[in-house]
Image 1 (cartoon, rainbow, N blue to C red):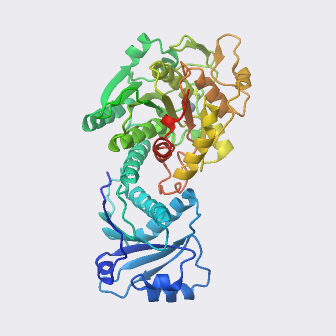
Image 2: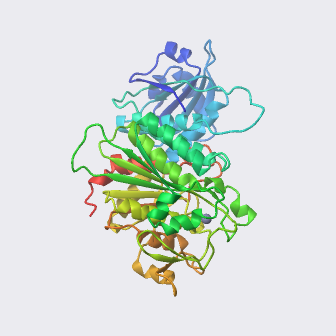
Image 3: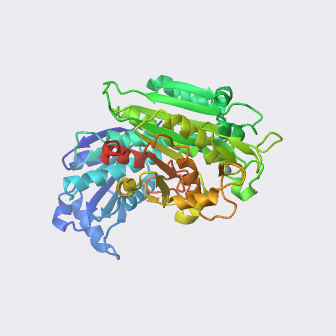
Length: 501
Ligand SMILES: [Zn+2]
């Protein structure tokens, strides 16, 4: 886990302090005057270099400089427009951190200068988020270890001192790191059995209650849709993990939250086997569950004052003599009969039974995360994730939470008439349609049926779970998208306080 110590200082550093830290990033606004730059140590040199630039020193531009001091400190002098979007800002911060990594030390100084306090905080936050994201340790199985990588140990922020000490950014980073780390693990290293072990040790360390509904238990609960997917596995280790966080100060009548995640530890497609190019990378088909768990961890770290549950729906989608087949009819735990159409649409099968179990407990809100459909990627690309809800009036706040966090989402229609495409001749509902191009919407309509008691529900189809070159401040292809978005939704937009019924 990343452990970087953060120190804040409201003042500008003196030359003396600059000389003690080996690397620096200085961020200023586009409109900054030469006289303002002069106040910064080595400001004269910075002004000279700025003048020598052929291009305009505009938003998202920067130059590097070795300072004429004993340590020959490396400095990046960068500029960001004050109206830059959070997504762009995080991406720019990641670029600066990457540039900084080329001559890295164990300490990094960050100075934000010339901004209003509120904007300065946004700028500093992005750089801190990017620093933590770039330091996150990801699994690697190379037998010959690369040269010991230099780890960033200390971060010195100048020009701004906050009372919160960026504890939310740090909690988000930890949650995101957990989500990415689990997702990157190959499926022979992260089977449902191993996943359960991970969850148990996290539960112990964080004082969570853990229950595991194994296949025997799920059969008892008549969760036929979940069991249909799990039955193809030679090892009967699939099941649903239920984790519970209770706030220290018990507040009666307080809203409660349930997070749900799709955890398909490997998706071969099942009987409808995926071709090679589509199967490659399917160890990450559990990323929804990892994002739910990462969000749950971040909320725990922040000691939120509402109860939270986290449900991880874990299975493998295997091919084999026992695997479920198209035209099978199975019965979910709420009695709904489902005609199987395509075994690669396994995510909605395991989630349907999970949603029944969760919604029967009537939490104030359910959020589920799933790498669910290719259709969502075709619709949005990989820089956005799709969002769906049974409470249409939430859509504007969902969009805002995406913009403000930099993890952007876009809603899709959830009109009832889409259900026509899921009508079955033989069962209550078809699992999916063989014709449709709107599979992400049909999948969401399918899932909504299993949300009982009209519990407010948000479903995130993680089209941005894996993107070449990373996304925003996240440098790895695997993004862990969703932790940061959800925290914005809960803590800034206070979605649990909305009139959700
Ligand atoms: Zn699938």
